[in-house]
Amino acid sequence: MKKYLSILTDMESKIQEGQYRSGQKLPSVRSAAQSYGCSISTVIRAYTELEKRHAIYSVSQSGYYVVQKDGDSNNMDKSLIDFASASPDVNVFPYLDFQHCLNKAIDTYKYELFTYGDPQGMEKLRRTLVSHLAGAQVFTSAERIMITAGAQQALEILTKMPFPGGKSVILVEQPSYNNYLQLLESEGVPVIGITRTAAGIDLQALEEQFRSGHIKFFYTMSRYHNPLGNSYSAEQRKAIANLAAKYDVYIVEDDYMADLGEERGYDPIYAYNRTSHVVYLKSFSKIIFPGLRLGAVVLPERLLDTFRAFKSYGDTSLLSQAALEIYISNGMYERHKQKIYSQYETRMQALNAAVQRYEGAGWIEAVPGEGGIYKLFKLPQTVNLERLIRRLKERNVHVVSDKLFYLSDNLIREKFIRISISRARLDQIEEGVRVIVEEVKREVGSHW
Image (tube, rainbow, N blue to C red):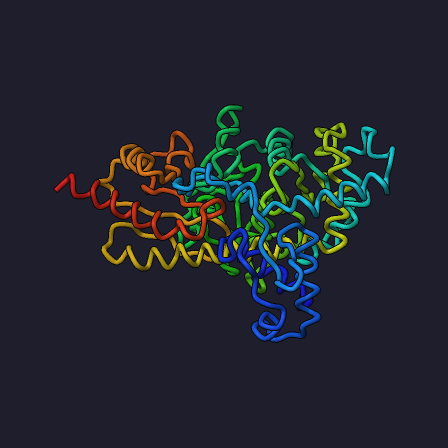
């Protein structure tokens, strides 16, 4: 990344996290140049870009100051510690950048944007995604990419459409993505679970399921799992790909958190599969904003025609697609990805530090994992989860219960709460963990 962009990203992060407060004067150009180890002109370029983004303003003969934002008003409820929401932080949405891309898209494509469009998605975007996905070791062609109204639509289509061989049972990890489990059960889809833990998955058990001959596909989040927060090891990813090829079972790999980590050499299951048994899902909502409702699915050749038939009309905004193409191709996406990753990494480090500080007493056990936005707190079996969550809410700490992440007939569950750092302010995290430990201790104590 160019030096001025790294300075820009760091400054934006510090402003968003409150290290530089509204109205506060920023370091002088000379001081910042010394701090970042660069030239004065590089700092000026970064400050000028921050001015364009209305993040700071300059005062002649005085310096640069942080702009007062609506979110800094005293009317906001700053006491709520939101460990429940999985949505991106509204304070890091790239409003101005994306507005620029929307305007440019209208100027570039004009009336083309207001037709129904190709159900497969805008060709220019699909071609841009070929090189974008290659950076994640997902090598494909534009013809095998379908643009969807978020990853959720892709999952709905894959669930309903027939697969080669006529198999009908969907295999899901336990625990797993709550919205997808709800969809499967509400639609009456044949579904079975397989246990996933901090250590990963029992490959022997997985092979037994694949060998049964009933599995239509295995739905998995290979990295930054929701709710566990951890990732499969390289050996497990390779083994899953090999088992899929051996038993002719499809994998639906939901890599929706792909951009929220910096794991070097992380290749998805897709990269290890040479027999086209992996469907790869990509979402853009965790990086840009949920309302964009855009995702992409990379399909094996054998599934393309059926998927296209089930997605028989252009139901995804062409304007949004065109703006996203511009956003990616001009480097804005990559820069924003670095910015949001940097902020979330700082929060996750704060969470890990707080856990280290308080879990020594043995009241909670945090599942290991780096990157992403989730951390799972395992609890003693004697804890009454409903009462714990109610008491936490009374103290303005919001968390999510384990029950959402299991199939309704799955009776073997680990007792846990899921922690998300995407909307928790940096200065709240330690306090939130302290309150959780206090309330868990109170719950356990009530049984002695």
